[in-house]
Each structure stands twice: as structure tokens, then as C-alpha cells.
Length: 486
Image 1 (tube, rainbow, N blue to C red):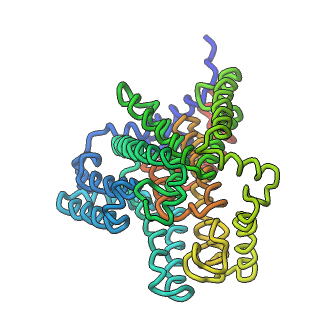
Image 2: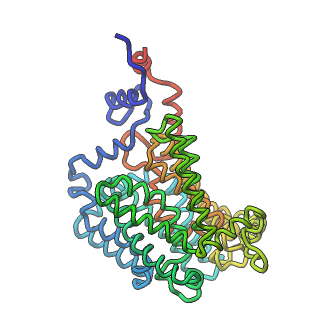
Image 3: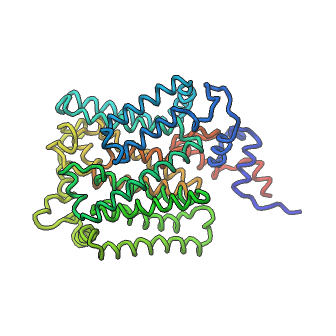
């Protein structure tokens, strides 16, 4: 009998047979992280670190999840006073975790996550120290206390992902509850905005935050690919409910009258089509299938663009797109609003960064500093804080997240990792053209996209080491595989 053709799964099986950690002949080879996570979730719980109860059934997970979702749901966040309510609920989660004994087990998982993601944690701590330095020495002192919320929320997101991100039940529970909550919020907000087209713009001055604001709409557009993926993989009635919530969220991003939210939705559809055609997911290896799927994404983007040009709620955003296409430096603005162009505001941030690249010009919060344009998280953080004062750390964080998301998709080629990668790219774009790398946007991107591996035996979540392992696998196959291949 002849030998069967060698497949990548054969190499993975050999590695599994040789060692449970994936080591064979002194080298570590590629394993399927999805299968590892499934085995980790299904294995019997032991007393290791006090983890005698599934994480999804602990008070710590439940209250921490409620705190995060309340923070990003305006109809709940406004009555709870935003960060104040989040802090109270999150502190209650830690207290209940201490009472039930789940904090110790969570601590083991967090420590393991830190060990596997040293670059991410290094940049996060660097970002925190840079913000503290600017708060004390370069800004307006205690008046700039909101600066601390950015790294604090980011670290909360890192903790949450390390603590619960490797558990399938925890991920599913968070996704489902968040989609349902934002779907209800989207229905209420869309009803209010469609009755009064200018409401979304006037909320900034009237304080009607209960319907959301431009950063909230942009966050929904960024996370929409992951929302759709989660809805499609759910069984039965849950699929219908979640898809309905996704449609409501899509409607809100379109009707919000903000060009950034609508533009991110369009870019997400086009980017998904390009990725599917160039780097197809598993199951779309044949050229015909990938072209059909790509054409569906392109058709959806074209139909949405046509709708934007016809609807009175979206005509303003459509006009901005046209002006930007004809004259990119205008940023989509015209007339007396031309001074608001992101292009001209970015020039101010770049000039001040080049004048003081190490520590930046200072001036406190980027939205209020006179040394930056106030409309680009990437350029404003560099202009105000410099490379060493936190701006370089923030750029490093986003670069690490991007590299991790691309690395996961490159190796797994699943719809989940495709949705995560598209969301990360949209987040990167949003932070360049708007100040959306601050506040709760990075937190929820981390929790939803999971741009790194967690508690996966035989693999390191450090992006650069994973890339080296993949290179070794394809460069030097072991002797057993070569003999098996004939």
C-alpha cells in the first residue's frame, strides 16, 4: 500500500503523541489552539489554585461581567454615573471573589497570562507610568485625573481576558449578554435619532448621553464583525435573537449621522472581502467559494453606500465621503468647517512631536491640550506625551494587538479569528483619524477579539515567538514526518 499524502494535521498528531506539550525532537511545533481550548474547558476541574468551580459559575465572573457591560450601555451607565458605578460593581466582584475563594484561582490564570504575554504587559505598564508622569509633572495636576482612566480601564481589560478568556463558557456568556444589551440600546437610540436627525449632534451640548455618543457608535462599528460571527455560531433561537440585535446595531451606526461610524462599517465589509479572497478561511480554499463570499461582502458595502446617499439621516456622512474622495486633505469638510479637517489638526500634533519627541509637549489631556489637534489618539499621544511619556507605549500596545490578531488568523484561519482581525484593523484606523484608542474602546476590543493565545499548552502567546515557531515548523520538518510522507 502507498503512503497517504502528508497533511498539516499529521504533524500536529505526531507532536501530540510525542509530548503533551507539543515538543518533538527538541522543537515545538504548531498545534490547533481551538482544540486545546476545548479540551481545557471540558477537562474535570481540580483543586489547583482553588479552581474547584467552573469560572463561568463564580460571582467574580458574573459581577465583573455586569460591571463591564454596564459601563458600555448608556441607558444603564448614565444613571450609575459611568466610572463610579463601574468601580463599585467591580469592587463588589473582587470582594465576592475573596469570599467564595475564586480570586486565588483567577490569580493563577492571570499570572500565566502575564507570563505568556510579556510584550503586551510591558507596554501596558509603560503606558500607565507615562500617564502618571504626565499627570504629576506635565499637565494640570489633579485636574487631569481622567487621564488615569485610560490605562486603568485597559489594565482591567487585560485582567479580565487573562482571568476568563481561556474559558469557552465565559467567552460565550460575555458575548451573548453584551450583544443583547447593546441591541436593546441600539433600538432605543435609533428610535430617538430617527425622530430627530440632529439629536446625535446636539447630545454633546445637551448631555443626552443616554442615547450614546460618537465614540460609542464607533465602538459598535468596530465590534460588529465579532458580533455577527458570534450570532451565526449560536444554535436555535439564540441565533435569531442575536442576529436581530446585530441588525439593530448596524442601523444605529448608519443612522447616527457620524461619518466615522458609517465609514468603519463600510471598511469592515470591504476588508473582510479582501482577506477572504487573499487569505481564505478553512473551508474556502477553492477559488470559486472565496470569490462568492468576497462578492457578498462587496455587494453589501455597495448597497449600504447607495442607501447612505439616499437617506436624509445619512446624507451628511455621504457628502463627507465624496468631499474626502475629491480632496483628501479636506478631511471631508468644506467652507467654514474646513479648519476642522483631521489633516490640519494632525499637522499640529506632528509638529510638536518632532520638536520634543522624547517627552512631548505635555498639556494634560489630549482633547484639551493646546499642543495637539485633539482628533487622533496616535498622533496626539505622541505630540503630548512623546515616545517615553506614554505615547510610544500606546503605539506599542496597538502594534502588539495588531500583530497578535494577524498571527492568530494566519495560523487558525477561522471565521472567529477573521472577525477579530478585521475588528482590530478597524480599531487601528479609528485611533488614527479619531481619539478612539482611549476610554472603553481598547478594553472591549481586547475582551471581544482576544488577539493572543491564553493557557494553550505547547504554545507561547508572545507574538514574536509564535512567528518563529511557525517558521521552524515549515522550514525543518522532523524525520518521522518525512518518513511518513515517503
